[in-house]
Amino acid sequence: MLLLRRGAALGRRVALARRGLAGYDRTKPHMNVGTIGHVDHGKTTLVDALLQQAEVFRENEEVQERVMDSNDQERERGITILAKNAAIDYKGVKVNLVDTPGHADFGGEVERILNMVDGVLLVVDSVEGPKPQTRFVLKKALELGLKAVLVVNKIDRPQARPEYVVDKAFDLFVELDASDEQTDFDIVYCSAINGQSGVEPDQLQESMAPILDAIVGSIPAPVVDQEAPAQLLVANIDYDDFKGKLGIGRVRQGRLKANDGGTFAAMNGPDGEMRNIKINDLFVYDNLGRKEVAEAGAGEIVMFSGVADIQIGETVVDKSAPAPLPSLEVEEPTVSMSFAVNKSPLAGKEGDKLTSRVIRDRLFKELDRNVALQVEPQDSGDAFTVSGRGPLHLTVLIETMRREGFELEIGPPEVIIKDVDGKKQEPYDAIEVQVPDEYASNVVDLLNRRKGEMTDMGKTEVGDYTYVKYLLPTRGSIGLRTNLLSATRGTAVIDSNFDSYREFAGEIEPRDKGSLLAFEDGEATSHGLLGAQDRGQLFATPKTAVYKDMVVGVHQRPGDLRVNVCKLKQLTNMRSATKGIVEGLSPPLELTLDSAVEYITNEELVEVTPVSIRMAKQRGLKNKKK
Figure 1 (tube, rainbow, N blue to C red):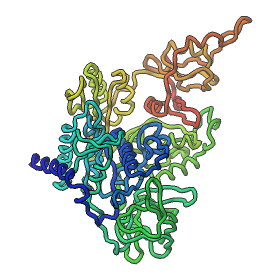
Figure 2 (figure 1 turned 180 degrees about the vertical axis):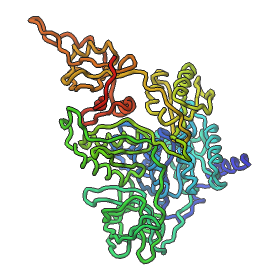
Figure 3 (figure 1 turned 120 degrees about the horizontal axis):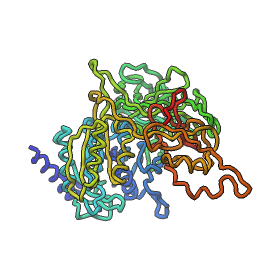
Figure 4 (figure 1 turned 120 degrees about the vertical axis):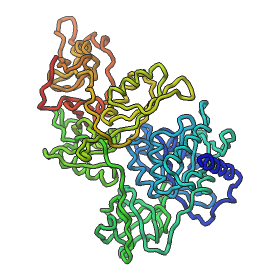
């Protein structure tokens, strides 16, 4: 049976090459397609290439790389964080493209966006094949009954193994209980960065037309009823400086009209209360922008203004015949962190948003569009517990707030424990690590010490590499990346994805090194740092403002140690206090928001301001001295 289904899929690929436009359903006015796949498999680059193919840009226009990644953090981190829309016209068919994140922490974005599309481009690397996040997003797409086109990207890589990747992808479809129709998928090979694609890996053309042919030829047109009462499920929210809050969603049935204040209402699920709304402006996507229209019919993805309190998951309905859809449900958060008012001695010197009220307003505003996030006030009144899908999900929010002028104190990441039938359960991640053979034992030892359970291990088919797969408590995966890279001299390739809740694994051994703490308030000096660096590695540099119990470095032994980094050298009539000392200082450790959040323990916190990132002992705790 498996071989028959595999043969049908491959036969369809040959048919696609022969079919061309003759196989198109010409009744399709438009269709909606999402790009899904594992992080760094080239989804955004693929969308760029499709936009180039559709001649969205002028001939003399300077186009930046990954044009869909317009967010500053997306460009800096090299990942997609927020799903975005674009629209192209290909031989008379309008194709709405939705670019989705590939990182597991932003799976909530993918889950709700899949409700807007008719099919997906499943993008897979030609060497790596399907990875953990590939399984997650494909599972969600198949559960919604969506049809996929398999795009084997980066086919120009010297180690490309297209047949292996196609076989693994097909096996994944079968493992996820795809229907016969879903396993009968088209296959297209491409090098998105070079603008090449084709239906055979060794017969590429200087065009992305084969991918567009596969989209229009194999993904079914929206099944819609234009005459039914209007129905639209809000899947995303945007903001406009002039229009205000904008709701985004796909018109499931009927038609929406602009400047209509008497026809429509909004409901949150079948049991929700119906409230009247007025739709002011109505837009559809046009290339990379939007175009105002008077009305839009079923099957189209639209953006509308005029409803200041619209929420993701609500349904816009016709008041005369309301037919609300169930609210969107996404996977529950697995990790939480504390966001509190900054109370350090340096508070208020670098930011202008300091109070619990403005922090609260900003966090609850974030809930408007970040559906995988949860916020709960703590009893103290000046702190909030913020829960998300992983540390990266939360640090992206922290970095965004920091750039907006907020000052915060951030607690360490903590996993969300559940009580199931009287037993304590915690989240587990599926971890896959690929590493040179010589470092495989280091990886196995590190994961075992973090209560990991090995599920697979073997040699890769390309190069002298070993892969190991583990089920690891999410507690153990926090801070894992830094330690793995250190243990393998930066050669490990690490992928992870939430797997399930399982029985509590017990205590995990703590960090094996303590912290170097500032002895007093002041400014770090070269002389003080020179003496402190014999005790460990430093974060601080000369002229860094410090305060008592601020973390200024990593102690070389377990336990914390206070060091006087503000110490001045005795003045003489021959030299100044700091002359000639800088040469002996070792380069400091790089301190980023992500590394700081990974580093801290339950006794420490991260102080975040628009200018600085600092770590300190939590106030009121007794510090252990060596």
